[in-house]
Length: 108
Image 1 (cartoon, rainbow, N blue to C red):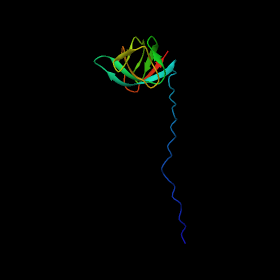
Image 2: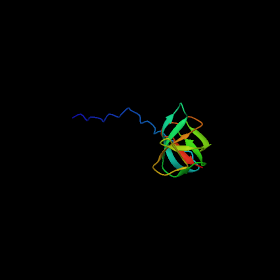
Image 3: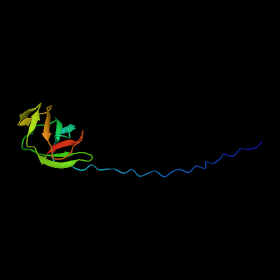
């Protein structure tokens, strides 16, 4: 009787790749909304408000390619000027730079 030898696997195990943990930049301020649309011809951002926001507040808009601060000079709800917006409102504000849907709005 002939004994069969176990064949050794010739495939080498690949070393495990080190997981790189990407840390998110700490953003000062409180999140007050998300951009859901941008109108390029009039430079107006449409924002879904998640916390109170009023005229005169300083905001920061942060996204993948967006990051700037500005003061809220005016805001509108359905074409009418308002002084403040509450959670759940959809507002439009004039912005100084291009924004994109899903950018986050912070009050600082």
